[in-house]
Length: 84
Image (tube, rainbow, N blue to C red; front, top):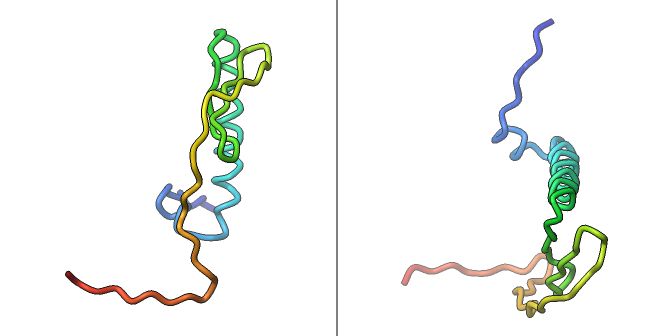
């Protein structure tokens, strides 16, 4: 039986494949971090509202903060859209 190719757009749009994307993203991220640390390059990322820099030896340093100003919408809330 021939296997069916799954294109990225199909995988992204199909809910049952979201766990597949999560696994790929997780392993890719870990490999990229390991590669950076092997070359003595620090990695910078967000952790909550903090911008964190982690060196190759594991030293964590908070280099900044980002204010969380996301719009909060209650579940089931309805919004009217209008043309201006």
